[in-house]
Image 1: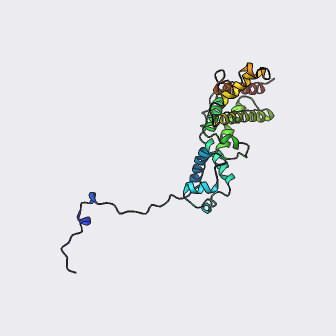
Image 2: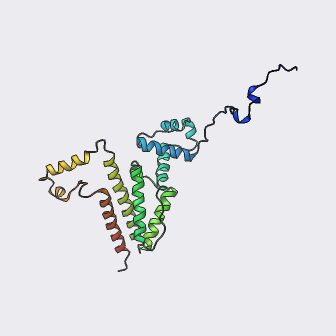
Image 3: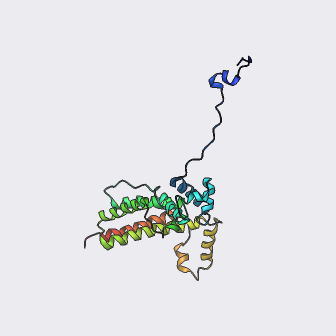
Length: 235
């Protein structure tokens, strides 16, 4: 075929100056990990009530049907999300001080739940995920090093878990109040009705300037650990 004498400027231009041909962008494959990450994001932004399978599918830019290949219900997502945030709790290195090992774990556990204020509300669900079990194993092994066995071990484990969960739930509830002055208003109400609540008023109940959440948590944790240490001491 005779040449027309024309040159294709795109082909003749230096390779470094040529625009790459457009490519169709493919969606990343839908995986359980992506579903859990998106679920945690929605829970952080909208809470438990704001997480629906439809919203989750929209967040991932997939159909709801695609989700059901990986998770069957919203409850599945909640269970996976709860275990996921436990993965943010570092497992401490074992030291010679079993009490301090438990303190380190409990503090990190509380911090993780406060970063995800929806989490304490889920702890009543069966907690059988690998992250939860690994940290419970560490907790119990530390208690065993402190001398706890049998019923004492079971009681100490429950006391510590319930304490950390309860403290986190209480703090998260206050922190999520629409009006940050709610706690101050509650304290003012107690003070204004000191005749009805003399002990609460005298003790500084809900008075952050007197006892803040960090101090209350540490003192309560020390009290439970003291009880555990006594239970583990041979009589």
